[in-house]
Amino acid sequence: MKLSRIFSFIFLFAAFSTYAFDEESLENDPDFIWLQDDSLTEAISNSVMPAKSISPDAALAALIAANAPVILGCNLYLRTNPLNTRLITTLPTFLIFHSNFKDYCKFYRLYLFYNQTAMMLFTKKCPYIKSYLAIDNQNLLDVIMSSDLGIPSNLPDILSLFKNIKIEERKLGLMFQYLKNWNKTSFEIDIPFLYQERNFILTESEIADIKASNAFPSGESNKVEESAIRKQVVADLIGFSDIKLKLGQQFVNDPYTIIIGGLELYVPTAFALKKGLVGSNFSNDTEQPTLNVTELIDLFVNGPTQEAIDFALDFLKKASNRLAAMTIQSELGDNKHFSLDVWAEGRFEFSDIFHINTYGNIKYTFPKKEIRYFLIKKDPCSSCFTNEKYQADLDSDNQALIQCDLNFLEQQAINTLFPSALSTNVKPGFSAEFALTFHVTTQLWHIALGYDIWAKQHEKLTILDCNPGQFNLPIARAPQPYQSKIFGRLYKEISKKKFDFFVGLQGDYTIDSSGIGQDFTAAISFEFNF
View 1: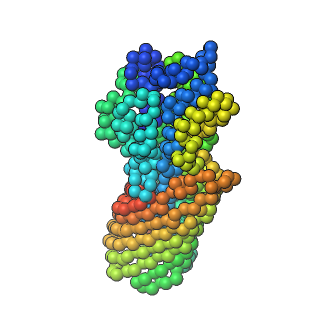
View 2: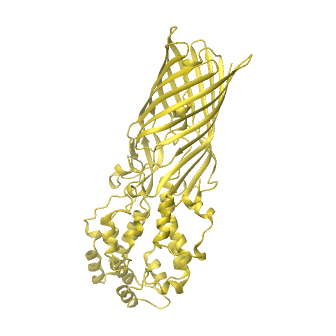
View 3: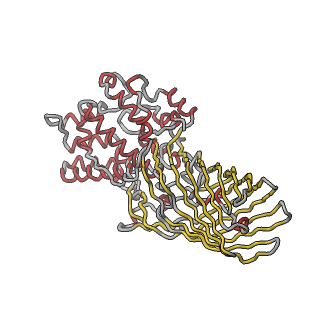
């Protein structure tokens, strides 16, 4: 992975902080946004107490001037669903046709594999973060630009530089397979061990556009260690994925036709030996932080002090971590779900050197409790998201009501930036797969070319321990995934007296997908048949 391509839009705020530490440069920067707007300064100065302590009245006045009630009536998150991926053991690269090994007592196979998804999908078809976050939403931008904070007129252009942030995923590991035959019965076990990594990414040209825009100041002071960047934009882990157990029984064994059927069980044995090797582990980021708006405004009253900057950056980092927990944090297996399927395959021989294999399964994945993220529903037309409501409360001079308004807006800010992590009963439902393969066999070489299609039912969610009516469930459901692939295998046979040894190259490539990224797999295998 080339580090210069890895990018996170929120991390750039951290790089910006090194510039913000220089207060003299800030004071000379007319585009820097802090409480030097005349209307805000006047509202605050009329209520400021000695020792730099701001009153609730002034805090609410500042929020009204900033158009905060209207801004908080909008949603930053357009979706909160996790990103779909496919278990490594379900890929056609690792599909074993039992009918091809009926003449062997047993075999052992070891793969060294690499799998990569260049662009994971946030929705059915879109790989860009603008479909997940409203950074390209004109309504939200219009509301923000209408505030009295003196926001730079080129803010929409700056945000547009980050709308095409993508997520890529890589898996590198070993796959061990064992097959045993007893008369007409066969048994297979697959054990995967892998390193898995996801990260935010921009292309080289997109990064160049950001640098050329001068959206963030350059200089020695804001150069950041590459390891620090990785910690913010990369999530990785290493360990074992779920084990697959496959039992087959021959139903037809004619000279030119073999039909086998059986059951497959996916056992949730996945566990990570370590999380956050070169990146971070965001899986524990499930709590919402606290926010005291009065304290935050108070810190910025007399200028952006170091304490104020640290406070703001820490809050932004927490918001970035929540986004990472929802998108780039992943599991090695299927989130502790058991799966059971019925399968059948056929081998149809047309000559000594050519035959066709078919394979199909229908799988049911059992429900399991998971942590999922949800947005609390908002009604942007409600008076709670209008400046007039809060101005009237401010004019009433009712301190209890003003404090209640501040508490409400604080919670809305938290809910907007930090979707709620809730215990959820996830029902993945059914999935199905079909594969067709053409085999050519010579004395020493085996060649196979095939097509694989896989689809999964739209998942169902049930929120536990909370009233589901207050949360937006549709945007929390992962899109229904579908994928079609081509795959191929090339084996070299080396016969020995007591066993046959094969070394092979194999891989698969996605040609069409919906709700799931277009990945590819490449592998080399070593096989001993007895």
